[in-house]
Image (cartoon, rainbow over all chains, first blue to last red; front, top):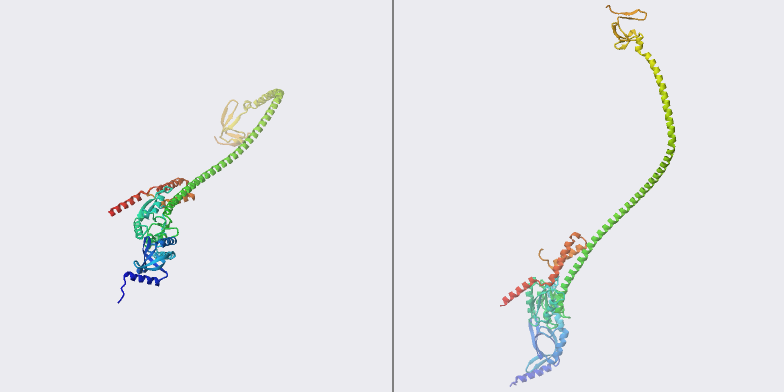
Amino acid sequence: MREVLSLYELNLILRSTIETAFPETFLVTAEIARIKLNRHCFLELVDRDEETIRAQMNAVIWSDRYEVISRQFREAAGIGLTKGIKILFEAYVNFHERYGLKLNIIDIDPSYTIGELALRRREILRRLEREGLKDRNREIGFPLVPQRVGIISSPTAAGYEDMMMHLINNPYGYRFTCRLYEAVMQGDGAEASVVDALRRCYEDSQYLDVIVIVRGGGSRVDLHCFDSYEIARMISEMPVPVISGIGHERDVTVVDEVSNMRAKTPTAVADILITRVKDFEDSLDSLSHRLFHASNRLLLDEKAQLTAFIKSLDSALRREIVINAERLARYIRGLKLSVRFLQSRERHIIQEATKLRLISFNNIRAEAKVVIDLWHRIKDSVHRRIQTEDRRIKAREDNLNHLDPRNVLKRGYSITRRAGVVIRSINDVGIHDIIDTTLYDGNIQSVVRAKGDQDGKDTELQGGD
Amino acid sequence: MAKTPSYREAIEELEAIVQEIENETVDVDVLTEKVKRATYLIKLCKKKLRETDDNIKKILKEFEEEEEVMEE
């Protein structure tokens, strides 16, 4: 007859058997599938082969241990004990007659989780790299003036508030046009919610200069939901740069890796935007400064050129003036010398003239007398001479009267002319020529009948009439 | 005046003007025009930095209204 046990009795057997069989602790790795804190921490642990769960068990961390374990884990791993992470823990296998089989976790090694998270992160990054997505958002040029800002955050998040205040109250008075794309930033739905917000941003991207993802508070808990392939891919495909403001001092998530820029806090995100705008305004100011100086210099150069020109003109004129002045001075000097010379000449002439005048006055009287005497003498002698000559002319006249042909003709001489020409020889006339004979008191015309020499012998006889 | 230049267009034009003046390739006669244009661009940018872009505001508002309609 087989012994019948009550459930309690059976469970007592199981408990003592398990306690005997496993007196030592085990080191186990598993993924937290579910976690619930109810004074003590209750966990559902799974072990996956790819996506299939191949083992599953409940575990507990008693409240006295939990406080220490969770604090140490948080400090070392940077995240809290949350669903989805893999842990390496030390546990007893416990069986309780009422609560059944359970792992009693007495310690968790955070370095394993850190490694696991890093591994997962690396795998996501490697995949993004393979697909050419990893650096895509980083390669987008950051806008000169990121004034239109799309914000992915939770409106109740302290970080969002901080950033908005920082942006609005920037000391330079820059205006930022902000639009909030609401999303759950922690917990189970965070990944899907952020992906959805990114999708809405994508649709509005032509009206946005930049997209920022900010997470409230400085907590490192739940950061691992940003080690998400889906979120990373959305960021990579965004046509405008994304700034990640979810990071923490030590942790770099996949989102940080693929974003165009990352900041440690939401306020730092605002600073990036403000600084960027300030840089732009600084370059405006510097250009303005350069503009002022360059145009000033240009004007000064022009003025200097003009001044130099005027100066050269001035000196040229001065030189010309000096030359002309010298020439003029020389000329005046020459003129003065001439004048002086002329004056001395004049003086000399005046002296000479004066001298001359004196001499003249004395001499002229004496000389005049001589001249007058001379004149009288000349006159007398001329007069005398004239009288003598007069007489001589009279005498000649008398002689001449004797020679007058008329007087000769009176004495019986005559003049014979042929055709007005005086005949001196018988040869001058021919027989029958008409001749005129001038006598004392008139003329006779005759015809030559014959002629002969002084002996009376006819030399020629002509005519028979 | 044609359409308002973007920040980038403005700063590129400014840079070109300033360089031209710095290289002294600008005739003094056109200097005034250049400086006037540059000053206009600087002022325009500075104004834009501190003024809300009304267009964006309007567009964003339209989006919000659309969403409200869709939510109903």
